[in-house]
Image (cartoon, rainbow, N blue to C red; front, side):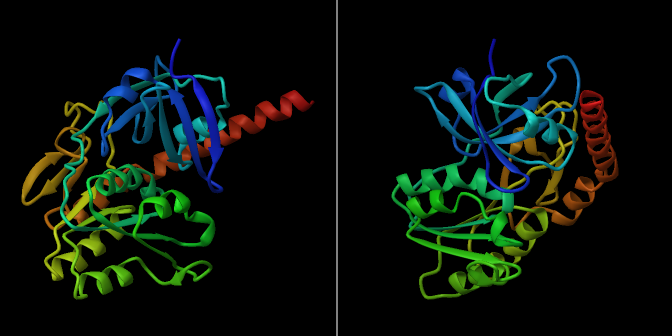
Length: 286
């Protein structure tokens, strides 16, 4: 028996956090690494999820995910005490942590989850941390309190102005990069489009930029090739060469095209799962 869910919280309408028993991964994991998760141990989709936190003593890891397709909808329906079919990891290259000076950490939506352990480790290494968190609305801002604890400066922006500053994360990022105290590193994690435009801003000011890519994955070991991206004109595999890369070298346009390749299938599978749940509910109530 393993992978038992210890705690479950709903952070927003479609974002959930699970604390799961996985003692070996909890002991071995480092900031920036991820796991491959499957609901059914015998079959079904495999999805990559960043390890948002770990407690080696308790033998648990924290997974934060957004309900967008069938598998994440199934995970959202699991309750405390139930088990996840399998969790494989830790996978990927860990973040290189060192004292640089000032690190600006930019998170968008669910990207705040993988950003938090990196920002925490950078702070522990002695860096000044400036954090920018962005989302479409106030309800979609997650982990703000956690970032507040480790940030020397915290800026929150929303597209609709419902919380913090009205605007996009690129606006305060440009102000910081163009200021007198230019940051020594930018760490940007969020939607592909956000990372693309943030990287354009930091490149203009010659600020080294690290992005974490969340591409399509199957095995997580470099065998399937589903996660391949172009970085500096070379083919890289996010699962083994990443997930972190130089944001100034990533071909974001190609990555975004590949990410959209299975959107319709994802939506159909999600709807089929919801329809199945509805039919079961009707039978139980009849």
